[in-house]
Every structure is written in C-alpha cells, then in structure tokens.
View (cartoon, rainbow, N blue to C red):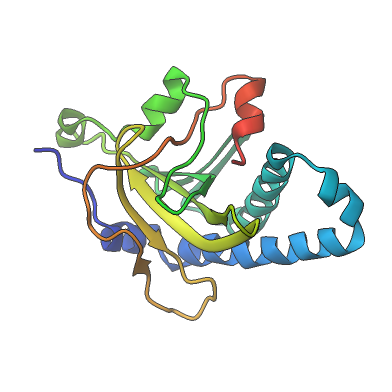
Length: 204
C-alpha cells in the first residue's frame, strides 16, 4: 500500500521559515484587499470572480516570494503561468484557493494531473521522491472573504489526503489539522499551467 508523509512530517521538513512565509502571506493579502476595496470600490465591485481570484493569487505569491527569495535551499519558479516554490529539491509547493473541503479548481491538463498525483512508490524506493503540495487560503464563498491560510496534500484529482491550517502569526503556534488524517476523498484541484486558460485559473 502506498504511504504518504503526514502533515507533521511535511511541516517539519519545510521548516519554520517556509511555514511562516506561507502563513504570513494570507493576512497581508487580506490587508491588500481591504485597501483595494476602500480606495477603488467601484473597480472591486465590477471585477469578475476570476479576475479577483487572479488578483488574490498575485498578492499571495508576491508576499511568499518576498519572504523566501534569498533562501539557499529554496528555488522560486516563476515562468509565465507556472509558479512554484521548491524546497530542498523535494517539496514542490503551488499556491491555490481552497474551498471548505480542500478542493481547488484547475484546468485538467496532463501536466496538472501529474502534479496532483504523488510520486509512484517505485520511484520513491529508487530515491526519486518528490512531494507536491498546495498552499494558499480557504475562500468563504458566502461572505466573499479570504479565510485561513492552509496547506494540503493530495494524490489525484479527487483525493485530498490532508488539509491543515497554518498559523498566520510567526509565533511558533502549532499547526492545526482541519480534515484530520483521512485518506481519499474530495477535490477538483490544481494545475500545471500550459496555456492562457490555465493562467487565468491559477489564482482560483
């Protein structure tokens, strides 16, 4: 049976700096949104849901990169629509908006599906392990507000393995599990941006 890293192991491996950066990006993005709404309310009010989602994505990405760009063990991939944080050559992290069940939207290209599937067991045994994660925030579709910072692991389009809430203050608070250590169920999920349609979906 295929085994997966639990959330505690992943958080420890990513390290305090990465977890703090992912968590801090969300309240900073909320502040950005508040300023945007107060300064340009008409533009916000007439923006499409996809347009705002892309704007959120850009802000979260900016805040994460500003915290991590000078770390020796981190590679920032920012090539057109493809954006990833690679930690220690093993953990690939993308930024996405999650719903309450941990689902994310994506245009299901082959590369997107490959990212959403974890490394096959044989490759892990051969020393080619790679863990693909999605960080971001939960979106409250009722209030149209940015919810808590989250990190999730999945293996396949509809298989969310775990979803945890990240501390939004760099105070060493413990990470809290939202879904618990369940196995398979949920999502719609991520993507590997190969065309303009994926670029628009990236922030959702």
